[in-house]
Length: 490
Image 1 (cartoon, rainbow, N blue to C red):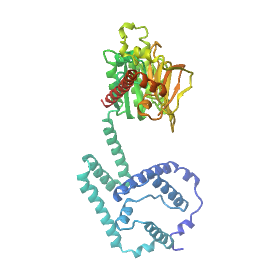
Image 2 (image 1 turned 90 degrees about the horizontal axis):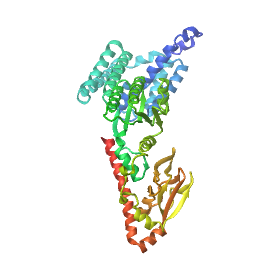
Image 3 (image 1 turned 120 degrees about the vertical axis):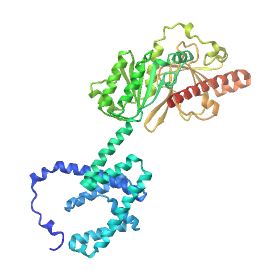
Image 4 (image 1 turned 60 degrees about the vertical axis):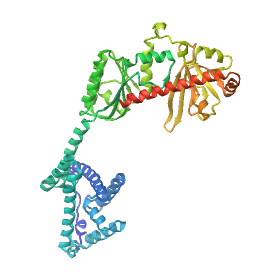
């Protein structure tokens, strides 16, 4: 009856009302413990110059505290001082933990008198040595390796712990560190880049006369790429950027907000979005949201803001489809435009009409219904394709499902070639890298490898002209890609 287990045996019945009244305290204690585990584990990582699995640390601490609670023990977690002491003493295996268990278990069974066998000078010397080592590392060495603000924060935390205790110092440090983070993060521009429809294009390949319209009217489409976390500290930056666009001499027809790299927002950012979208709408612009996560759309809806009312706002799953919709609106606005204003010379067509007349007797017409395959990924490069009418979807299968690579658009007049496909396989001799299926009824002319071999033998000049056409198509695609990259890089 002299051991430390005696209080456990003398415990009486629990007092339920008093226990229930402490439930809020249990919640706070659990939160503080979780934070302490993460802070201490991070400090141990630094002290031991090792990588720890934070998920594993939290799981082990939770299981250990469950067992300790059943036995009537106190909350515990990884300790910075004892872990550092054991590491510096050379105890770097599980034997150190087993030895600590034996010592603590013996004290629990035999009573606190066991601690009297340890000389006070030894325990005091260990604590003094470890404490001085920490002070030198964080106060003296920290002056040379830490930013001034962080070093002052260390002094503040140390002072608070000395005056009010560990938990008060930790809480004060968290509050001040959070404030420093907010100030620093507010200095990061959440607008990664701003581009126009001249450089930001969808993956829809269009006929030359449509490309000419989009190039000329590209400023009517403004694309704003957002990034990071939108909160009260950065909402003003977004608001100023959008306001600058709305003050343009020629207000844009469509403003695309790309949320692909945004991972969070708070209510202040939602209010800023509502205000700026209203200002853009009043100027006649439609605001298009791309890659907007479902939880963001719900948060905006709760604030009474619709991201897809089909009048003032629209929403699309990715930037490619958002740009396609904007381009379609731009082209529809010029359907009645005089042909003389955008007329192209014969040599500016994808395939010059003279070459088309020569190829007319050699290629073969294929009519595709929606969903029908023209070729599949992995097929041999056995043909070159010329799209006249309709739409072809180029896509490949990914772990997350089908992924759109490009959309090939036929010529509006159906008298010229709208797009060419299969040119990479023909040039490189490699298998098809994507699937080609019809989105709508499509008219395609094909030149098989046998047809191309006959052209090489019978009319080398025709083959040379065809190669020039393919090289021009590839050069146009490369130029568009470079312009888009340049626009993103600013």
